[in-house]
Image (cartoon, rainbow, N blue to C red):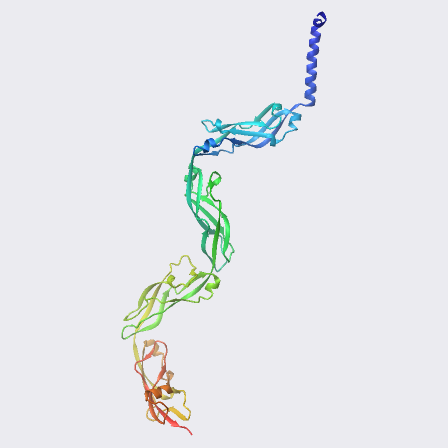
Length: 425
């Protein structure tokens, strides 16, 4: 017993010295050092505690990412772990009244050897509010510029409605959903998938990161039509009042329209013919003013190429008073049409070398006619018919003249001439 307790001071000093030596050796061989990791993600746990109550949450300020995590541990431990071993979680069960959740950071390896973990932030900040839903009509638009001579036709989507869900404050701010297709340089139909963009009441895009959509893109079909200008052609029916005549002049505003359609369709359309019951001049003594719905007369597969054109045309059918003029026309200007074998048939001018022809029409048209410019013909069949003949025989007969007259000019009464028929040798 005396040996054990003797020199106890020396023995205690030796023990302390041994401990110090062990500590120094240990720290020299495996000292505590630190390592810093950046942008460490935080996993939220038990989020169903929010969603099961018909609510949604939004992570604020990117607080589900820790910008800096510093780990203190012996060098051997630090050398054995990486950022992949750092586990950061936040349990929604611990949600505070300020809608913050404490972050717990550990490692999935050698966690009992870690001396200390220091983080740049220790909570995830949430915004928690009621979940809302809304259904929106999907609108398709186009942007860019087509090649010259082409226009946009029908723009359709394969789905025309979209369902969105998210925080009530965000959903209430969303007023429309659109897809857009760039048509720059296209000359044929387009079929493409386009992303859906959400907009607020001011037409500004809304951040959709907090919104879930039943579809995020949709198929859009854009028809591209060729264009060309064609004139409007009007068919006028009826006869004006006695003493009046159609002048042949028709004013139309517009006089031509830009049409659009597939190139194979519009290539064969050279005019738009309008046969409207309203273009009837029966009994009129003044100009007819009428408005026509041109769209009713567009051929199948053809539409208007100008989006600003309203589809109607203002028409004026001009009616003028009838004038009369009498002309002494030389019988030499009347010829025989046809022949009969064995007979010479000629106009008989032995008694009269002129015939009197009264014409009716617009004064301007009659003024342009001279007696010398008027020409007529007598048909062989007319000679036989008007004289009750079944076959040609010698003699002098009368026959009605068919006059070659300008459009809009007509004879007031038929004019006949004598025709001499002689056998030839």
